[in-house]
Image 1 (cartoon, rainbow, N blue to C red):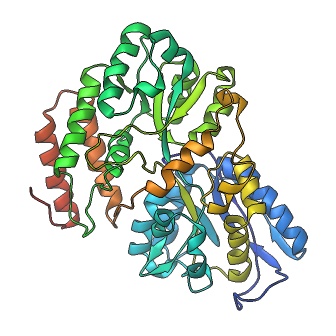
Image 2 (cartoon, one colour; image 1 turned 60 degrees about the horizontal axis):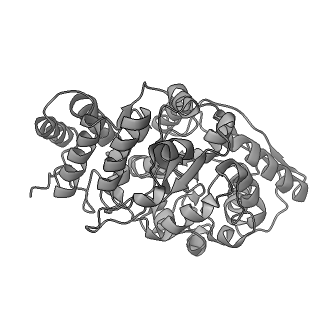
Image 3 (cartoon, rainbow, N blue to C red; image 1 turned 90 degrees about the vertical axis):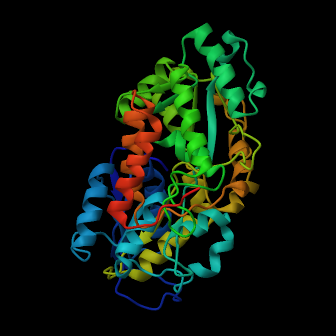
Length: 424
């Protein structure tokens, strides 16, 4: 999920010495699992149930800020596991680079049983945590991208969500909304989220399937030019850096629409309670030239570390948490969009939400899941993010020449990674 809920983190589950993963329990001992803010309550609740079934298993919970977790994770991997827990929650987009740089630091949970459970999840989500044909993680929160919009602002401008079918429509009606209400139609981002969402609709990203740098593909150039056009025509809001300004814009109504992972629902409910009844969501627009009304924005899963002394407990708790309806209903109630396909058939998933004026928002997100296309993040994903961020800062939000800045981004990325650059 994209820097979701940047605050605190961690959970601790603690287990016994290494043994056969096929054992049915009971489990005992201690194990530690890191996670970030919103994850704490559902993990605590699920751990409490698990411990009742396995009284000798002790589950602790620690709290670490999101940025601190990333720092500690990187330091721990460099130090061959020193300071790391038994397992951690990890953003989907970061897994590929970590596992390819430090493959021996992660547990092949596929061989422990997860390879047989991939059918429980959407294909794109299971693929995120595959390495050398095996599962190295437990898919958890999915981030299908949708458009959150303010009903009152749309009504004041005379715009209906059903009017918006293409991205050109989005720009057209966004200009009307801006003219009549002063509100931004594409709001809330200080990074490259607009680019990654639109590009994944085509099944593309910074790199192609072979790992070549693909920033100058026709799709990429078209997308960047469209985003620049949205900025020039006044509908793209470039907010201040940080989560607090993001939530302030949501609460005050500075933005009338926000393309985001559906996980944003929980943040809106908690951070802007006075806006109850004024929000709706709709599917992503499409251009109709090979794209689909689906992308992933954010999302997370759990991974285990090889140094763990409590693999049976760690594995079986995470399997319980991510693959059982009992545990996933707890996570779902906590605001997470479950990757477990069986959740789609539950009454909880079909509920109408008063905060969204009775809309069944989860059904909108579910429509996108089968359509989401996998992309190749590669080991150099973080470098690509840095260069595209610079491109946005210089050429999207300021006045640098877009194509010259794109050339510079590609040149720098090639120098840093040694990868081939696709030419068209």
